[in-house]
Amino acid sequence: METYNNGFQGIETDLVVVGAGIAGISAALEAAETGFGVLLIEKNPFIGGRVAQLFEYFPKLCPPTCGLEINIRRLRENEKIKLLTLANVKKIEKTEKGLVLEVTQNPRFVNNRCTICGECAKVCPVERPNDFNFGLDKTKAIYIPYENAYPSKYVIDPQYCKFDECKMCLDVCKYNAIDFNEHKQKYRVEARALIWATGWDPYDATRLENLGFGKYPNVITNMMMERLASPFGPTKGEIRIPNFNMELKEVAFVQCAGSRDENHLEFCSTVCCLASMKQAHYIRTQYPDTKIHIFYIDLRANGILEDFYNRTKADPLIEYHRGKVAKVWQNPQNKRLVVEAEDTLSGVLTKKEVDLVVLATGMQPTTSKKIIPLDNIIDDNGFVRNELDGAIIGCGTCVSPKDVASVVQEATGAAMKAIVKIKEAQ
View: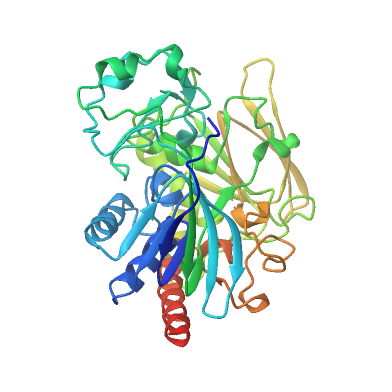
């Protein structure tokens, strides 16, 4: 399935935004609604990024779907924005007037005739791990990424689909919406400014061997907890591990799981403390008698967010333990997990036996994977550093860890910087 169409298609635009999470969408809308043409590029088959995977925001504990739906409607109705999903930037060249990019778009194999009727998925015989839900459940090889995903149409995973060996989805589709003959597309994009907003990935918890992730099913990550709590997640909002019988009486949150550690992520991800407090609320709401243990090095809750921390701290069933967790193992007698940490306030080694461990894994910028095809644009931790090269305006969590509200504010500033560059190039 590596076949390309012949040659490059040309696109001219004022601004390219790479990454269609909350940062990229916000920046694209700010620029487009000011009258500038925008090409929005996203590697996934959907837009929304990590925000789409969250159940609720802190401190208000409201769902992010409301804001996303509003922004998606604004984007859909704005003719100044051209969206390319399943696309990646392969090359960037600077010119006197701006930039030239080489962009590759992978085939979706489903066109705009799709009505999301679901008949194709019903007959598809092949399953794949659901990466949107971090492998907690499965989808068919032809699938909708998540409830209310945009673009609103199915997509085929070429790693799992049998294509011509099967064709069952083709046979049941009444609208000729499935096209196995789609090829990769290549674009040559000329632009005057570029915003890089590719966001973050959860740190790989399998690298934290002492904390039991991948070894014990009841050790999960903070992002997995978001999906378990979501009514659109693998358990329809019931906080439990699929295919694992477990009564939640005590839960431990392990802060700085891989963060502030020179062997993993040496920086603080800034939002993990508050995210764990928020998730403690998820559990306490669903299981009112469950006791929560939060193991931390330092608690970070700046400004108005300190009120959220104080509200959580006032809960008599949420207990804070100052100390970095050394290891997590399973009690062979009852299959519960034992969390071991030194209390740095008392100097006493503590062991707590719990039913579920949630690892607060850090925010690793996607740019740490060297996805920007330009040298000297990222620092040692993989964050975009604007001062190193004027060709790219960094935006969002690929610049530094931050919460959603801060990301949206930064996106407005990035759009303003881009507009200045566009004006200078005219």
